Length: 399
Ligand SMILES: NC(=O)c1ccc[n+]([C@@H]2O[C@H](COP(=O)([O-])OP(=O)(O)OC[C@H]3O[C@@H](n4cnc5c(N)ncnc54)[C@H](O)[C@@H]3O)[C@@H](O)[C@H]2O)c1
Image (cartoon, rainbow, N blue to C red):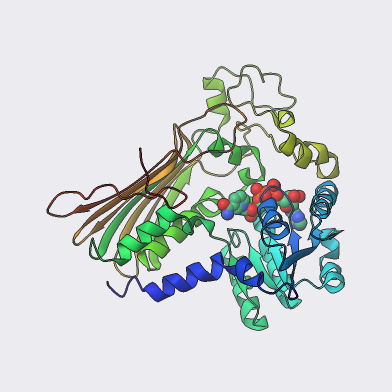
């Protein structure tokens, strides 16, 4: 094992993030108090865990959202679990919320560009923070958060959940075992299909002012994985990107007259293969369609509209502080969804691939199922070892 892959550091990082809720659950009398700001789709993962599996040691005391309908819905849903009765607050009352409901932790699941504001205000009010990725969208905002952590001595945790899955942890273990020696170069391609990938262009993510673009919003997971896998930090980065597919020109190539404003009222819904039926999914309808009157936000905006300003085609070259070079590519209009990565080491190569979903199964489908994992170790000289992949539950993967 080289000192690049220090086992203790890895276990510390994994344990800290993965076991937070579990350790907090110890002792029914010491309930941890949480407030959740931004109660859209992602927040339900956190509220579900706290009101479900971890309800004995944890409780949600408040929710906050700029959309009055969604914050009321979230409070009702949490109360219906019988695991607490959170109070719903508007953003203008964030400070008052902390004073009145005394949460120890603020969970930040708002639109990316707004994270910094809530993180800093929560730290200054004496709370610790659990924030969704990306922690924030600009270097200046990141610095603001780091300064606030230093000033207050409080803690911010970014939920990089991709690390904590058996196949990705297995890759880390293989690298740490030294089986392929020191890693000299990495080739990493992430593909988003036209179901999940297209969804970024329908929602608030389509504007850089909200999401920072997919290089921030999405690739933050991927850069976190490589930094962790390598145990190294980037020191030189070159990157470029463009929007080539989700454009008015593609709509015209498909024979459409659009772009139009949104799918719900689109005059070409019968002809557009990217039509997204928000009304047909009860979950999405309750969360977004039924609450449009409060803020005018459409969850089904046209993916061809010209005002989108994020890229769909991105390439990055990185030199790490240990000399490793990375080639990275992300595109958002691919025929299947998943990734492949290859690590070239002084003693061999690891090839790792996950197929999340094989293409667009049907308009409106946003969930994908893992359909294949491959992890192969190929020595520089000698025969490739058998595939050693674990599936998402940590069982040996069988095709
Ligand atoms: N780790 C992951 O794999 C993963 C997956 C999905 C989303 N996320 C992250 O979760 C966060 C939320 O994403 P989502 O998919 O739930 O989006 P969403 O649109 O469903 O929810 C965002 C919520 O924030 C509210 N909001 C917007 N601006 C606000 C403000 N200034 N103050 C208070 N509330 C505000 C909206 O009304 C909405 O209810 C994002 O940061 C996203 O990057 C992470």
